[in-house]
Image (cartoon, rainbow, N blue to C red; front, side):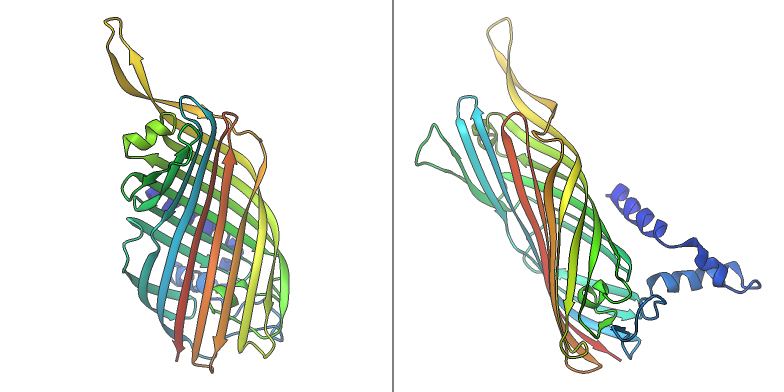
Length: 354
């Protein structure tokens, strides 16, 4: 976890132009320069490269919010010609993770605290940085509260129920974006309400993605029916070009946002851990784990990312917003094993500015 947190911070900081330091007076102290630089990094309220007829700033500096957050995932694993069991098909879904949170902010600086209401995830960490031209999102979570079913072709018409605690899934996703038309189009207006989209506009947007995950069978029966497959560990990196659009018919009072991008995965590393019986000379045997690197069927393949948001501003003080994000993750191996996972998060917020 420390590694991913440091990676997020390092990536965020490298995106900020060092030339901002030149804006400070020559006689400013190092501390004053640091404070000024920090405030400019987090503050979206006065970006210099926007068209004020398209994008505006909130009238008030302070903000308090109440938020409900939901998250979950779906996963399917398919295998062909698995020894002893033939073709297998496992479908899993998590409990919906539900949180209630409160937050407070001043301009671009925002702090929040949430309470886990449903215990959908055993661990859940989210960090986001939405700037007008670029941004970074980091999500890391794990759960053993997956349920579903597992079927095999040698047992037609039968399915083994997978109960909570039989499997565990860990996932970490780091993605970033770059907006080409930041002068007229604002992603923060849709996702954080830090700015106001006053006229409809869209932009081509570039994305980069890194993801790691691990799906493991904690119940030996699930592993045995899966041909001895105890865990699947995978790493992916990709990039893509997509498009986002903010529709607002009334100077930002109502906003509908939609964006999506296909992601070309150019790096994929998979490690499978198998349970295997080893025969001994005396006729006995013992069960052991063997890990091996598994090649993907295609060196380059496609996944995707999509966002949606609705914002309604009652007046200059109060707004309501709902947003959702989904990551599509998939790969297939040369050994006829396929994984498809959809990781999603959604929330509803009521904010008051003053």
